[in-house]
Length: 334
Ligand code: NDP
Image (cartoon, rainbow, N blue to C red; front, side):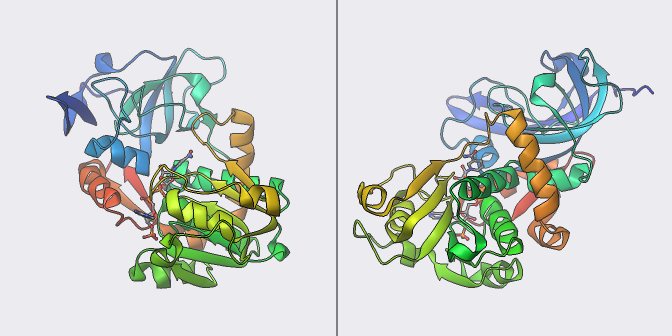
């Protein structure tokens, strides 16, 4: 099987001009692509919070210029110097600083390192994998962290913050499907029906969770998936049950943590950080297997929408304004 690469193909490229990030769709050639032992025809990518930061030039996400962003991709191997992959293999890549330091998924063709790839899990097609993406993988890693801390469906209510976003939506859907009693925290009334359809039993406002907390508050949560950080994470910790656990993965509200040691030393609360970027391949593969098994298809179709490369900039701006709902898949051939 051979695959002819066209003379040129499209990619979203970020360049710096006088300290400002400029994003544009450009025509690239095979020779423009970086070094790597596997050449892929990219089928789908996705838009995560980090991608939005990169595309809008928020924070210091990009480490080399010019950059093709897109921290996630699925595609088909069209050239391989790696023993582990052959022509026609369907593969999946998330994280490993791709889309930050190395060129990523917002290109119809991309050359990457085989060590960053995993075979596309059998039960999942490329579009579904990108509907899950880094956000969904992170949600699953958070849930696995709660399980490691012995938080069980019958342990009591669990809370998910930033619930309307990508990580939050997938976490709500999986936890509900596993039988947990899920409370969703959302800053938008418009997400309430959506979050209920994903299985949330209760919804509380972001405003309520932003109120400054005392070192210890009444115990409400056996576990938590926190995508917000800052005052929201501080309140979650103060409200977590004796022996409960909090998986912290995000900073949608801010990177600070205005808390005290009280939840840890008086209630035995566990705060577990969760990173998906450098997560070892072994744990990733377990997480993807769990995603195929524990995230119901109907919830996933509710969660995701598909856009073209030309739409990425607008979606990124909406995301930075806190307006994103669920997951956004990018179809490179749309
Ligand atoms: P999204 O933009 O899809 O979701 C973030 C959600 O947070 C929003 O939809 C909104 O939900 C809520 N939110 C927005 N602004 C604020 C605010 N000022 N205060 C509190 N909540 C807010 O992003 P993702 O779901 O992709 O990512 C969520 C977070 O997780 C990000 O901080 C991201 O960097 C982090 N992340 C970390 C990873 C890791 O490996 N550790 C991997 C992936 C993501 P609502 O309106 O419902 O409140």
